[in-house]
Image 1 (tube, rainbow, N blue to C red):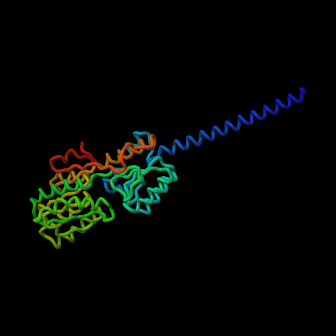
Image 2: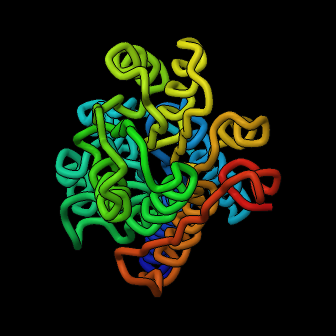
Image 3: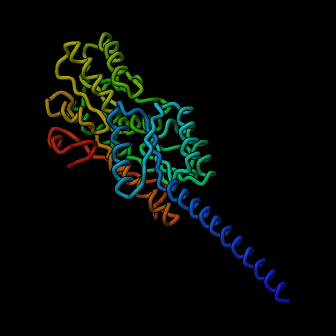
Length: 326
């Protein structure tokens, strides 16, 4: 009996030791898994158009500053307005199990599938600056009130033009929802003045270089241009450069965005006005809402959020800094 009891005791001891070892290994694996999940959940992926445009760079910088403040890591990517490239970046965010995606998208229609794919993978998307043509896919769509802002710009343009004269409109990328909304906002005001004559309307695809070349051609056919209203500041800078190169004087140029370059041009007396859309703050709002959503499962806000724009002219231009009023 003693021998049997000793054998039983030894058997139980072995079983106990094995269980302890296995339990320890299992605990280590669970802890490692938990740590891995915790690390992954601290990554926010920010996807924007090219940082060569200071507006989009400001978005990335704003998101990065707020993410770091809230304890997140950030991966900043550039899609160059290429929907296929953007789709690959969404795949990267999914593969890295990001906590959230902040995106200024590459197309209102082309982006829908990518956002839905991220949602299916359990990764929420927070859109900034540009909307997509779908609801319920992204958690938030935080955009400037482009129509309200364009009306502000249009009203200032009318005043500067003295309610009459020939003018040109440079429009943004045709596939971008904001380009159409801004143009509609401008014309909601401008079309009320019969002595304002639109002599040319062309897309310069948000590009300074393209705006310069388009304006060169337009000026050759229209030497009596009195004003140019632009869908963004980058095109306004290109238009202003072409006007100067052609030796034209006193041509009214108005932009949209609120860049430091146009601020400096306004202060120097060249471009007359722009409309500030607070890119830096909007991207920070997106990160704040992502943080609330990750922690609470809700942002506490509606999906679509419009942020009002501010007119910038010679009276307040010196208060403008990096797409924000000081």
